[in-house]
Image (tube, rainbow over all chains, first blue to last red):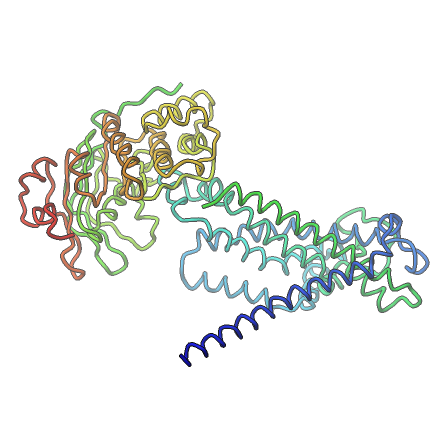
Length: 285
Length: 265
């Protein structure tokens, strides 16, 4: 009797602890979002979104930074998606079990563990100086792509592994090659997972400052970028500048900029999640 | 227009001393038999006796498992299908397979059936339409789905899904159809329908079917091969192969008799 009572108590405590941890997560996320919205909303206006910064960045808008972040993120996707998805396909579908595959996985987890400021230095050395791309959208996007690759590779591999192997067998048994099986059967079925994982990685990249510090971002620039070799203002760096370098600026423009960044990233994530759940309803195993 | 191919007389297999080794373990050894064209050959035996392994040798699906080595010779209409020059992809267009669990692709019924032909480069809509209709008709599903070809295959019942898979395998116009316990996950009515379908199919293709259900083997097959693995130390082997009627009424080997009368397995 005693033993059962004790087990019950432990059970109640376990539910309490794990539940509290879950509640803490929700509370933290909610607080963060609400706080940014409350502090940032007053700054948001049509002018804020469509004008260049004025009066030593104390007034005007943040359009160049929005455009810069968009350009960098698109550029990152252009490099990281094809390479990341292809590498994920190789690892999940082709790679033989052995030393070389273990080496690839080790390399990927190492890449994921490198601090982002180190990517910044690496990007400066390789893309900006050695390849002579200068401080540019191209150099920044390449640097961010290196940072995002592990996320996309892992997401792709995970998504492909979820696809039942009897679908692959069915396709092979019909006289399809491995590649056709991947391209026509496995990849479409895994697409929702790949897209969600990749967008998660890309939104992380969109908010990074350190990797683009030396490779793409500038303090202030009114002109819109006219080529991939142009340097740009970007939202996260602009937040840093406003917070540390601009004296006498109203606080709400910092939070307004943060709200634009978080809002944009959230909007894309929600869109991806919605698309995924629609796909899920269409395809169930 | 693709004309209905007849493979009458084609699709015979000859196995000479076939063995399969996974890593260091020999799963089956010494299997020699002839598989007749346009007939149903059943592979029976207790679980783990290598029926499915032997079946997968015939379309070289064992190749996909990575560590399986096939020994001996397997001839399809006199041609060694394990020859270095022989492309397994080409073999699989001649030797189709239906799996144990229905495994339609996550796409429409039409696209499922048209997958094989499209893989072979058939693009013309009228050709594909004709192949899809003919294959679904042969799989005895056309009447039920002709109005919903655009329906997602996952919306069908298990038995219907399995017949989509049969139609899908037939659409490449194979000479041989391998079936790995195709009805084992289905209800009795669906099983009955699949069995009826098999009986009609042998007009077009050679059928090799693995089944653990002896009544099923007796009902649908012309030839029966009995396989056995007596202990884990020794590989499985072919006990005997013969006319189904003879095997079930007057088996030549005591072990066959014991298995068929239900004394083990």
